[in-house]
Length: 522
Image (tube, rainbow, N blue to C red; front, side, top):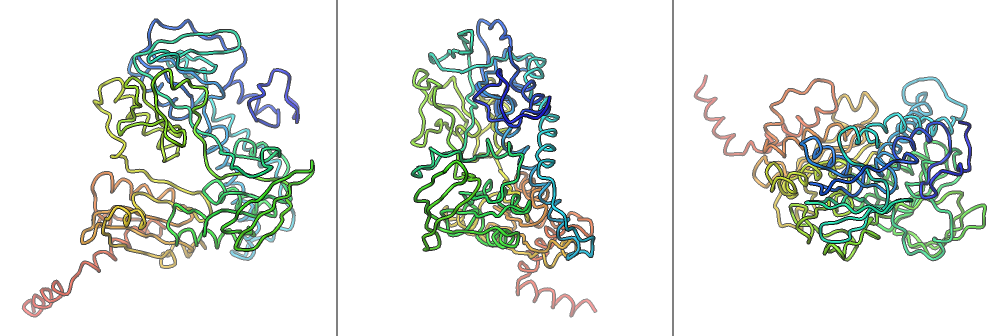
């Protein structure tokens, strides 16, 4: 199929997927096949799952694998945000941007060849589309039919406490269930900025459809999505400005970690505007004009593309939750208890539609809990409070965290001791030229019990799992230090933290005891 910037006549208008090349056509055949024939519904399902993102797919696969009668309903694209507009395409872009950066800095940092020509941004995005299409069969419609799941493509609406009606282009199908799981996810929120709704601004659902690099890009939002993409596009050569409402980027993370990321963003050419207030946005058919005040200074910015990454809105509209007696929170998330059950005891909700922790791995973990809680009265399931959840922001360096931050410990009244080890003391980080970062481990005061950890490093996301495993299984920092870590690796920073704890725990009383021992042991 030749590349086209206009959709074919049968392309769903609700899917912002460009350009229309072979890779995207393959993706559509996999995750939103045209002319899908819905199965004849069962008399009653053990489980009906609404939404085929990570949370819904994992739920359906587990339940079907255990022998349950399962129906799965999706109105948009199988794979959800993660496959189509989130984790998969963003990491492809981030990796390409890092390669461009390494090539551009190889001469200065490592005596490598000096790169003088520009890169091919179109090739970057074509690679993204190919990889996404190649990965998609794992989340595809046909795979789930092969697992024994009844797949329905259309809009789902609760029509009663134990029924869901599916509306597609030709049919209206009523599904009866013993249990149901809502897993409809969330989408990019549109902030109430005057004029914004009348402009062709980008979100994560459209930014990965670009085939030409924007000369100028303004990013609104200093969270993970905003910082990751601001840095990536700056490395591709765009003039990037990142404006956000906070005093520093990554407001949920450790302030020292955010400072390292800010320094890295600015080194890559990103202009940061802190404490920004957007007064108005307009578009003249050629460029955006944004009136804002930031850092106490009013200004007007002109930009070719505007990426809005200021939060997420749960996908609850049109679900008919009232008919099923399902309550929502003031911000329209589905309200659930610690076992992920809604106010309707037959219905559970998981993933971004109900969770404050909006990560793919959290959706996966909640799916496993919800299926057991819903179908087996909690046997093999559990409560969300028991989950030890890591998170990663994939900037360069990465910021990985698990457990409590310093601020969260203070809010909960938990007394902690903090061990800090800087990466500049790690041989591998210095040899790699990646010594800008640190590890902080937060311990319950007077013990080696790990209650939280923050790691800032080039591959922090690959290393934080050691802390997660330790916390999950009750292994203290001393136990982590007993493990032999290969030299030279950046993961040695974990052993160094354990050494620092042992040194701190070596009290003056212990020193006196050892001094007495060595006077006797002569």
